[in-house]
Image 1 (cartoon, rainbow, N blue to C red):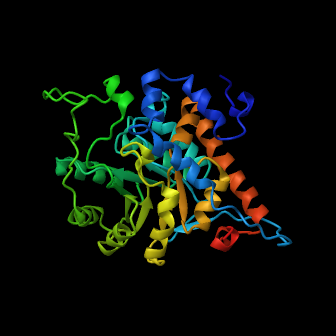
Image 2: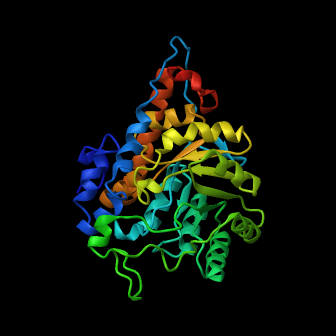
Image 3: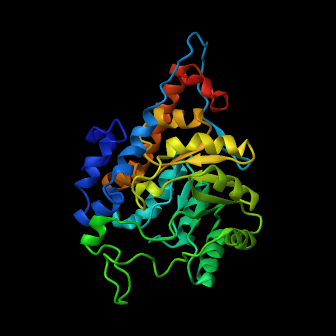
Length: 351
């Protein structure tokens, strides 16, 4: 494996996929790549970003393309965030530390998973030294004091926002994980094929729990991740969320679930500008990013792609994924005739 992704011929994000597969153990690859059930939703997540077609405006007189965006009053260099992904050290020995370094050098907001192999203080120091911005993802554990201790540690380390994941009240039917006993829970007499609930995470989460997390967070914004319905998006904002993340958990929990590209427009319409909307799920190209923005998203997140980069080339691979997507976004923006993210509207899509 060459040190630079370019030396291995990586030009598009999906070029990383086969390189990553060759670099990790089969059960680790299954955990990363598989979806739930028959994996129909995994396929549809990507396919759904191919429509509607673009309708370019010509003779736009462009001299530059500006990718900066503002989320929660903070200006970011581009609208591409790194989604929370668990156990990054399973893919590369530097894991989350390498990811944080790559995020800092590419001006990317990294959302750190609750399930990290690197001490949160170390990650905070990396971000602080490089002037980087990072958020912390929260699962609500049955042991709420444990959850509070994780959140307080993340805030002390410099996390600028919290992201509450709400779409996992039960386990998903991830067949290969269960075949290989990957993620086996404590010995309690329940076999992998019969287990429904995670014994550590709270399945009985309601909107009052969002208020609890907001109280712990103080002045730090709390986002809600895992929204697919317009009424849930509105409820999240009504209960104090700073923004919503349209996500189906990478199609890892429930098969034949609505693709995020399909769910996005109705959520944007229902939100009516009250709070920002971020979307993930199947984004692999700069054109996917542009289409998401045209459909009303304020930013996007990518998950599997940067893990492919991490698994194959460490920090350089993660950075290369972001650089490819940002360059492709700039190309696509120029080709449809818009010079800034702020100028992107649904008008660039064929009606």
